[in-house]
Image 1 (cartoon, rainbow, N blue to C red):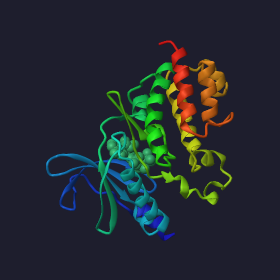
Image 2: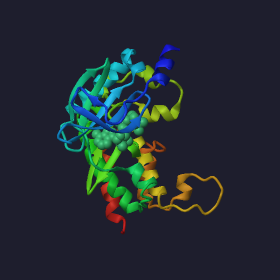
Image 3: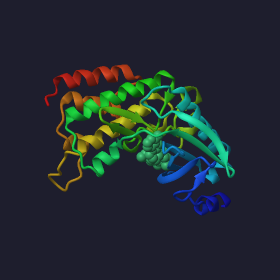
Image 4: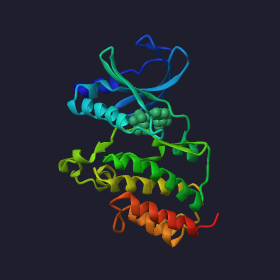
Length: 265
Ligand SMILES: Nc1ncnc2c1ncn2[C@@H]1O[C@H](COP(=O)(O)OP(=O)(O)OP(=O)(O)O)[C@@H](O)[C@H]1O
């Protein structure tokens, strides 16, 4: 009850507010269930992203641990494709992570705001680039667990993956966590590489549907609606765990590369 009160009563910082006498709030970027995300700038005007753990999560050990883990994972992933974690601090009894601002548009913005349309070839080309950076994450035995269109940015040929709030080390796999009977949640959140492929399967569907025009009002499956290659369909079925799933990234990368060779522009 009290945590519900804290959740609804918590007000985000206003624009222009100075944090630690150093970082000025420029804009609010996101309001998730466990964090508030701001765009801030320092005194020289350099932009950063500042993530604040929500108050009601701060009193919960698992909330504090996840926030700590998010920072630890960002520090571990030393690659330009992921935001660097610069600083963790407390201010007014709230926990913060200061990270690198990655310039770009999310695939959600590209599809829904910019109305970009992606062909099958373009979709799998984006996928192969993204898989190469997901490989960097998996090589550290980390599963991202939230590879959705708002968490993948694109800018001038560069791809960035953000939001490690749900990421976990493989060793942190706990049976009870994804055993609550909700199958969709389990497929997205399982602490196994295949849950990242499952999420990317949905990412691929979002891109493919951007260039789809409905021809009837009947409810159909993506396999009936989308006209894509047999290879593309087979990859997607495995990603979505409708047929024997990919357990590691290498065979998936290899299948996407083969598929791309046969697709025309
Ligand atoms: N490092 C970053 N560089 C650039 N933009 C970022 C960065 N981190 C977050 N953002 C932007 O802020 C938005 C919200 O951030 P984030 O996903 O971390 O928080 P969230 O509140 O948990 O959001 P969600 O509910 O979408 O997961 C992102 O969709 C993205 O547009």
